[in-house]
Amino acid sequence: MLDISVGQLACFLVFWALQLYFIWHGTDSIRWLESWSAPIKVVMCVALVWWATTKAGGIGSMLSAPSQFVAGGKKEGMFWATFWPGLTAMVGFWATLALNIPDFTCFARSQRDQVIRQSIGLPVPMVLLSVISVVVTSATVVIYGKAIWDPIDLTSRMTGIGVGIALIILTLDTMCCNLAANLVGPAYDFSSLWPKGISYRAGGMITATIAIVTMPWKILATTQGYIFTWLVGYSALLGPVAGILMVDYFLIRGTRLDQRELFDENGEYSYTGGWNVAAVVALVVGVLPNLPGFLHTAFPASFPGVPGFFNTLYTYAWFVGLVLVALVYGAWMRFRGSARASMLRA
Image 1 (cartoon, one colour):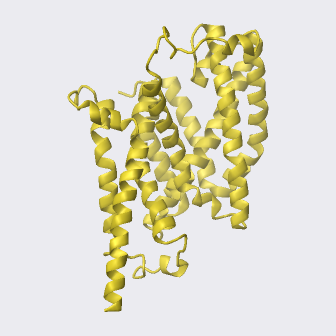
Image 2: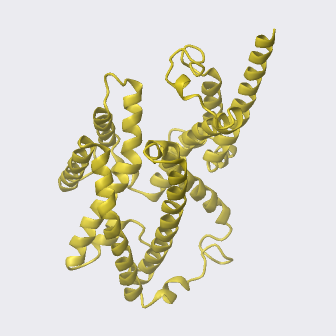
Image 3: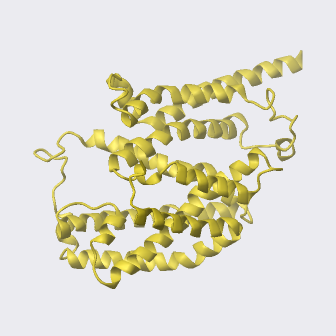
């Protein structure tokens, strides 16, 4: 049922326990881990590129191969069919951090600080990391005869002390990324649902438990499952959520919020019994068109007859959801605001 060996499960549980330590000791411990581990990971990335270029006989031999999308290539005529799902998956990948970045920026000393640090700290390292990933994966074609994108698979093919060092760095890197990008946000979210009963620690423990129950090793088993089912799939939900937040903050409210009202359960933002009906309806409208394509991709045997239109639409899931939500929510809230203003004038 688990599709995982006893040894793999034991390693997974040890890794899970290490993260529980940092969850229990709060955000300061996570900040400490991120601060001292960053330089180590930079050095290891440089070492990995050196190893790849040395083994492959230089960077030229790695990147000189013709594109598989050109005439006569294995994927001739499939560029756009590959590009758009890949772009949607990457947008979905970053959409998680984009939505919960306030959980980090709320600790910034000023608006200027968080803008500068995000502008430098996110795009620049990720561009460099993307280049490193392309170079190393390209090198594996020369070294091993096929492209190896999974770092665990690549590490297993190495020999000597490098294997142990690589595994330690991979564990450290995965833990840092997981704690910052995947745990802090949900921990705060669970705590916000019931502040009196769920602390940040409890929220983190709930998140960690769900992480095991979902069996992530199944998601990572194939690139198809990870990219097209998981990343594109949850981008179909995150796109509409992002659309509601952006339209509400930038267009409806003009970037102005009444902080006192935010904490008043009967204030301006309480809406109808605590629910913004416009947001709920817009979310449903944004998600539904992508649902058939997701079901066909995730469960092809159970949903074989989904029209091709919905499968194509699904490849643009994040963008489709965001645009639909922006139209529905923006129009509804504008009308609601106009109607309210008319009532006040009357």
